[in-house]
Image (cartoon, rainbow, N blue to C red; front, side, top):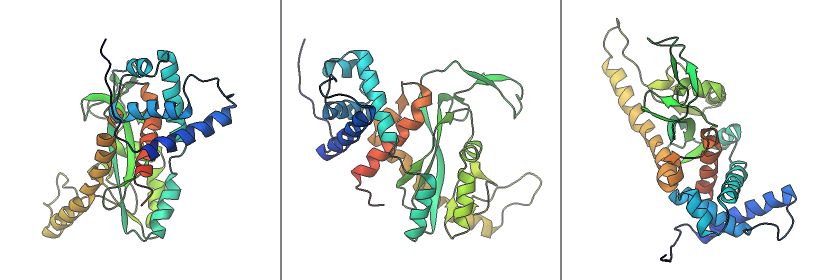
Length: 280
């Protein structure tokens, strides 16, 4: 067996922040001193290694000299404790209005996961009535969970939603989470939302590109110009998804229960906000 050293490329201050969150969670649960195999800081390092590098849990268990079941329990505890600090949608929109923003960007992303056997009945499209995999996304052709997110005009992630199965489309997911209603209310106070064609007719104040529909005249030059400007502004929202997925490798493919994807993404958002010291 060969031993070697490794460095985790996150600031020590971030590990201390996670340790403080975990220490507060331990106190809330009434955990007695000296009853855990790892200290709060050791548990924070274990969780950050998983988020940052997607280290398999059995390797984390071996490196930290705990059982595999204990490593899973510590990881789940860290995810839940961090996700509890994720911002609220209405709070985020109020803050953006107070900051004087003209718009926010709404988009969705698929967080990949292992194959899930759960099925559902398709209610729309040509194969209506057919049995399909609940967590399978036909658009992305893989299994995963649908996450909706809001970003600033320059592409910084502000808020992420709970998870829905990958078979749900973006508009249905946004309506399910009440996002469209909150954004429509925000638009009444001057905060518009830019979204792609998937959110067409989502609500007042949620601006999408003009679509060319069958049987109608071609788009006018003004409509083409609007679509071009809209796309160049909205595309910056892709940066938010990239920030989360490139910084936190665990979001590229989740091997835990897919129902935990929402909490995992919210925890990653909290880590991202802390790394940027809440500058937004």
